[in-house]
Length: 145
Image (cartoon, rainbow, N blue to C red; front, side, top):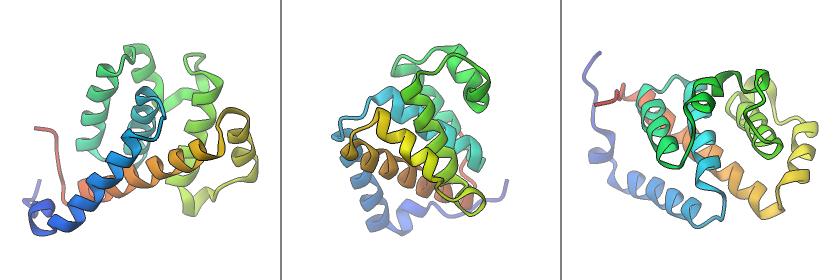
C-alpha cells in the first residue's frame, strides 16, 4: 500500500464538516443499528477496507449478530432483515451505485411504507455521508489499524 496523505490533517475544515454530518445523523432518530447497516453495506460496495472494518465493529456494538453481518452483502437471499431494513438496504445500493441504477421510483415508494418523510431524508443523508467517507478512505488508501 502506498503512503498517502492524512487528509483530515490537511483539510481540517472538511473533516469538521463531515463530523458535523455525523452529529446530525446521531440526532436524526434513526436506529443506530440501521445506520450501521447502511454504513457497512455502502462501504462493502465501495471497497473501503477501513470503513468496512470500522462499521462492522460499530454494528456489533449496536447489537448486530454475526449472522446478519456475515450475510449483509447478500441480504436479499436471507430472511435475517426486516422489511424496513430491506427497503433501506435497497435504497443504499441504488444511491451508492447511482450511475448504474439511478434512484428507482419503486424503491422510493417502498421507503414510504416504512419510513416517515423526515426519516427518508435522514436515511438519504446517511447514505450520502458514508459514500463521502468512503471516497476519503479509498482515495487515501486508509486501512484498518
